[in-house]
Length: 200
Image (cartoon, rainbow, N blue to C red; front, side):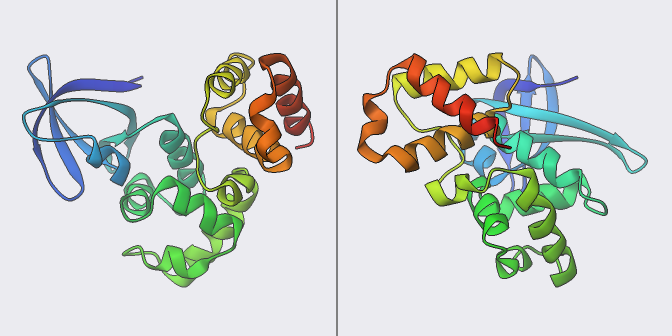
């Protein structure tokens, strides 16, 4: 399974990049976040996912693991394939998708070419239960910044939680504690995050 690609960016379009990896040219369909990392003539590292179906093999590129996990949650919804999911992530950022799902913002999804109202409603309904709603309320898909928070996020992933779940739990703790969040040490923050994750 291809998990990441690193190489020289040969060219870019509005939806994809050609990445030269040790002499092999990969045509990678990219999210908006991934495209922002790619400049022709420079090296780039993309998180990747290879999807093989009756329609053929497609290689998708992402800025980070959060985008990749969100892509997989979207493609798990009946009737939504990889290309549609990538079109969604090409128009909307990961944060926009999570926020739209949490707030049942159907209009946000209908801005994506090829996504009608029924599909948008299904996306809102399915993703609302699949991703932590608090990510939208805390303003992003990444875990709160800071050395302690980063250490705890790594610990949670080592325990088997996804990056999205870890970021979500830390986001809830930060929202609840406010300025006191930055005063917690690793042990106390880990306990608080685990307590939040056990509520799901």
